Each structure stands twice: as C-alpha cells, then as structure tokens.
Image 1 (cartoon, rainbow, N blue to C red):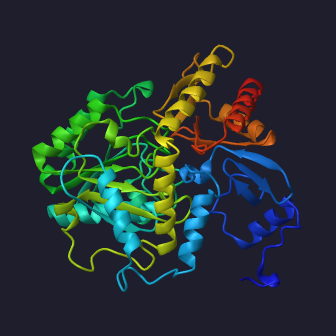
Image 2 (cartoon, rainbow, N blue to C red):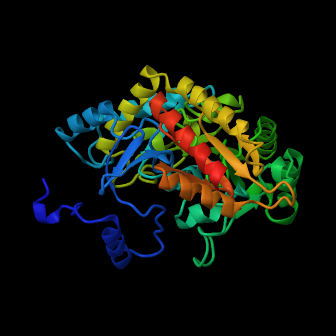
Image 3 (cartoon, rainbow, N blue to C red):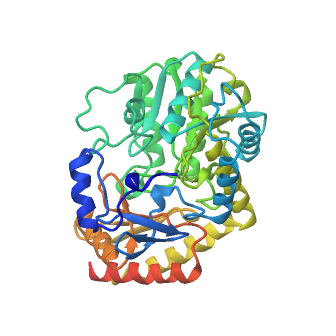
Length: 433
C-alpha cells in the first residue's frame, strides 16, 4: 500500500495539476483533455474536481468492456493474491497457456494455430514482422497509407502517416514500403491500390524479398476506413503468387468492436498472422500474435518473448474479458449500438452538410467531414465539435490523415440511457459547431 506522501494529491485543481504536468513531463507526450481523472465506471468518468464525462474514447479503443468491470476487478484481485510476476520464460503459468488456447480457437481460418503474448500493440506488430521474416527468410514488408502500427522505430516505419508520428525522428528502418489504401472517398479505388502494390515489385522491391503485407481490416488512426473484401482477396492473391504472408493488424478493431470477435472473420480470406491488443485485457497491458502453427514455430527458442510479456494480472483480466464478451453478447451489442449511432448521424446530414460519410462495421463507427462546395477536409470544424462536446461532458477522439474524422469508441457495455444522453450531446455539438 502506498503511504500518504506518495499518493497523488487530488484536492488540487485541474489547472494546478496541468501546470505540474507541463513542468514534469515532455511535450512529446501530448494530452488531449485539460482535466485529470479521479475515478471511472463503465462509460462514465469523473475528474478530480467532481465533473462527470461520458467516455467515447475508451482509452483509445482499450475499454470495450468499460471502466472497472466487476468481473475484471475480481479476476485481477484474485490473481494478485497468488503472484504478480514470474516472467513466463522463467517460470510458466497455466493462465498464459489457456489464454493462448482461447485465442487460437477464436482466430479465423482453418488449421492449427499458436499464440504468443506480449505487452503492447507495437510489440505485437514487431513480433509479427519477426515471425514473418523468420518463416520466409525474407526482409521486406509492405504496409499502406494511413496505417498506424505503433510508435517504436519499426512501428513508425510501418505507419502511413508522417505527422505527428515520424516528424523529427530521422531515418526509418529499411525494407518497408507503402501502397495506397483503397479509399473511394479520396479517389483511391481497389484497383488503384492493388496496381500500386504490383508497381512496387517493378520499381522498389523484388517480390521474392517481401516477407509480408500488413494491413488493418479497419484502419484506426487513419480514419476508420474498412478494408473492402475485394481488396483483401486481391492482396491474398498477390501474396499467394509470390509466397508472401498476410498480417492482419487487429489491435484496434479486435475484441468484438466490429460485431465479430476479430474483424477478419467477416472477410472469408485466409490470414497468416494476426495481431491483437488494446481491449483484450480491459486496460491492463497485454497484446499478442496468433497465427498458423508452422509459421509461429519459425523463430528459434529464445527468439520471442519479453520480461513482462503475458503478465499474469493482464492474462487474468483477458480471461474475464473473454467471458464478458460471450456472456453479455457484446458482439451483437456492438452492431446494435453502431446502427443507432449511424442512424442518428445520418439524420443530421441536412443540418450538418459537412458530414460526407458515416461508416464502419459494428461499433467501429466514424463520421468524416468535408466541405461539399470545394472538397476540403474540415479539420477545424471537427475540433470545434470536439471542444463543444467536451464542454458538455462528452469525450470524443479525432483521427484521419487530414484530422477531419470523429471516431466513436464507447464501451460496448454502455447503458442505454447513457448512450442516448451521449447522442443528444453529440447532436448538440454538431449543430452548434
């Protein structure tokens, strides 16, 4: 237990804590809100001054089962009473193995699978690349414009957005290439994207040197653009022609967010490796890679792992999350809530002509804002909507290459009454921005 002197002083104001933040932490860690959390429950959060907010950010897609779900608290508390750490590579524990078995069963596609657990999404992506390189004996990786795959050096290289992720950090790792992600709203067809991939083989890299394609079934930071099934099938065809692997990054879109546990289950396309993280452990740091058993076994013993990888507390939380998703039917609820949100946004198109698109499977929903007169993305308008919503107690996140997209990441466990209140606040913000 912490002593009184080491506990944060929540009696001070948000402004006082923000002054201390600016003095104590680097500006590179940007902060969206100007208030400081004191407690939270399900979809609601209270700051240190007692103000209440409805959380439509979910810790950036981490809280599909909400803040402080009692079953998660119980599972973590029980595990904490047993042990908090051994390092799985030193002394293994049953929870890691049984969670791997569950992820193997949930991963789409036929055939035997294996799972490695790590700590963060970026770590999962890097391990997927390591596994792909070990399995193929090749080094090249092809990613896509607008992608987000992490803030580590390799994660930055794979990410298809410069500001703020790559700005000022110098040269990126080699043998990473990008192709346009299909986006009809911005003039990129499926055919354009696949043709550009093939052009890379003529101008930039021999396909015999490409280990894998990596893509998001629904782009996260890039703007919540779903990958068209025809695009994924085309990518699979190119991969099969050249012995290339297909990696689906489901770090943001997994854990029931899209209406199925993994979004890839909706595509009926064989995936070789799949990364997961974020909502899998309800806020505790846990991530992983699941894939074809023969590929997952490509790395030599000791080549994979990490000191905190598959932490016992996070593993216990993940077991509880899987039970909650199943028992509370959150895959179905994701679809129900998403349809309500999209219907409400679509009713506002006449009143808010900047609404250019409302999209997304399940509850991975976004609205994009473009001026219909000149086709210009409306980043400033989106900032106003976000600010008005925050003033009225609703937390929203912005994404997209042009920062003109609002994404909605509420807990799938949100109460109907709180969801309705949030939609009213959202409508107010859109009408008054």
